[in-house]
Image 1 (cartoon, rainbow, N blue to C red):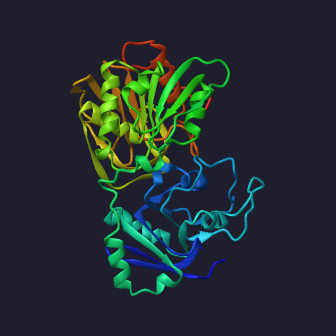
Image 2: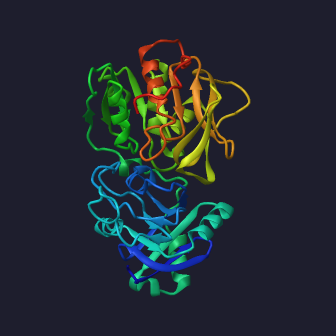
Image 3: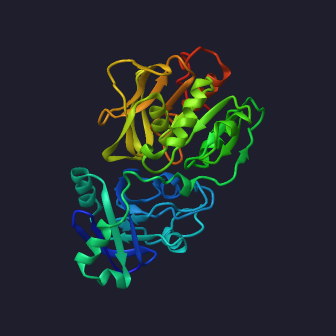
Length: 388
């Protein structure tokens, strides 16, 4: 194991000493914690983690190694990586290399051997904040100088990161089997499993750059539009909000997840705000208020939609209600339009990695495009798990 010394410095001055994990050097970002016990490869390659230093709350990380089948994009996106007890050897038949080697190969600076439980408790009490990881020679720098560098690094609030992670050119993911629908997916940081889940349901998906215009979208004659997950502050997504409003005016069916939920919320006239420490992991309890069913869901968001839970809201596009809510803290986890064909959730229904409880949402999107109803009202069996 790597015995090169490393130090983690939080914005408020608290520090943790450990050993280098992955590349040696320095990394900056927003310190956040992820509560999943598995799925670290999908977490690392999720573009939604751009600009964040991820602290794994599970103590033992890396035992299943890394393979070429599970990544959600073509690279690791996290700004840095923090683990307590890295695996000494890989023990999965699917692995082609170790996590430590993959982090080194992609230049991702990490730290191991620290008390991640104490760090997580600190972030829960003080909130997500900027952090720096320093290893090797730079770790010997005067602590006050390192703290100064952390405090001058970029903040997540106000950050516009979609251009960093979105595709530059459109690409196509064909339907599996018979093609039933054509979908235009706005890439704000989309995960590879998402168009695959739609393909399983007969959706031919055109993945478009984040800055696509309404003319670009309508030229494809889509049956529906998907707004993907992604990193950054939704308050900066003005172009995508205007696109969504144009789609709602034309009554084009819209389904958004994560960042896409926040964009739909803004398009409907709601505000967004930064959570104290966010939701990240594959074990977050959410209630579908329509059916009463509780789902275990995969999350990665530090911002949320500010919509009332206790009433139906009147918006420029008709009536809207909160469809899903987090059972841990009451945060809005979904929106449902009653007068236009649009809905969204704040979490990840593609289940990579994570539970399959929310797979039915892709079926609900198919129903919306099929036009079985006037609004976004699901049929009685829409909450059954689909082919995901």
